[in-house]
Image 1: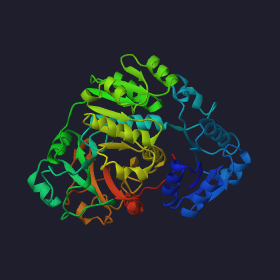
Image 2 (image 1 turned 60 degrees about the vertical axis):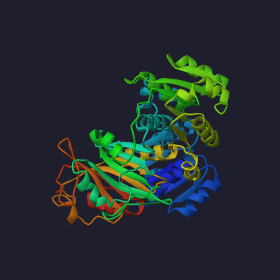
Image 3 (image 1 turned 90 degrees about the vertical axis):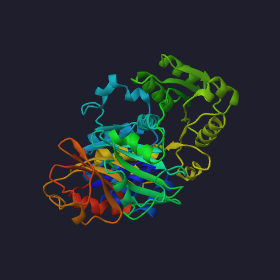
Image 4 (image 1 turned 180 degrees about the horizontal axis):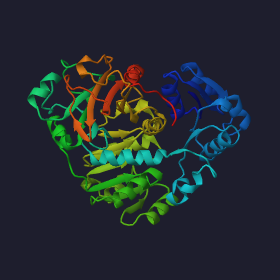
Length: 458
């Protein structure tokens, strides 16, 4: 497939990294020559320096025979015009645009993106993706990461292994004997910064971060077995009243669970807009690092603090200060992956990486065959993918133990006729099953061959 990626920033580079590694013909376009050079030096891609919305630049990038254009520059308007030019001038069949302004995303204006108006096939909102991720973290406070699969019946849980974890130093194969009815599997372990797929004889050690695939109905029991206690979140302080913070506060107001939220926003204009948009949420104008203001927001009695300003360092410091003042849980938004190793020593419970959430969302919309969901784990180190088994797949009709899965891949869950099954070595995979597979980045292509799928557009 021939793909043009407009924007070579963090998101564009990661998408190019994924697609170029899967034998696609990828061209990266950016008006910053240094970013283009970084992409061409580190990835198997071509690069064009220039404004992606200019027809001659798209022409040089190969738009005349391109299958897909992904517009992910920092400008909404450039992304929209790029899709329009790709459609009107070059008849590119599929166009994806990243749009951040909430005005463009309002449901009442959805007709804007019809082919006869502004022909964008898929609109990705980083703020909405991040807000959804934040809400998932709040809903599962004992995890540092969480994502739903298999029609909501399965959950990928990121769990930090502490000293009070009952299954520390226990070989993973023994967990099945100890908890025979538990529908959960450890699919990934991060140890001393390195992520890997564990073997049955591997153990969990204090300081590890485990990725566990669990049946949703068994999630509370899974967390308990791993030494975590689920707490109901009733009071939340949100630091940052921009698009993300406002989206979170709105969702909390609209939710069925009664959650009381307070928002702290430094910019007076943003604070006023948030106060006008929210009905029951209190909005405080001031600095989220101000101890007095945090006290006024009731941080000592809050169940969680969510730091989602546009400054990573402010988020880190605000989360640390909130925890030092008695807040039991801190969730932090960070764009810089190099700051992630600081989370544990700073006692920050969970983090949200906007780049990872946006990349996962874009990949979800360009997977072809029977891949239904894709979630990027860590710094694109692995993926959790959900796919339907085709009759042409080499794994159809085989028991899992007989399938030649690469070492860096493991089946976490299997859904058959709407029911989630905990897979074992003897489980036979049937045509029509939907399976969730955790795969390291280097083994993703091998897994896709087993599934008989490819990256393409619909």
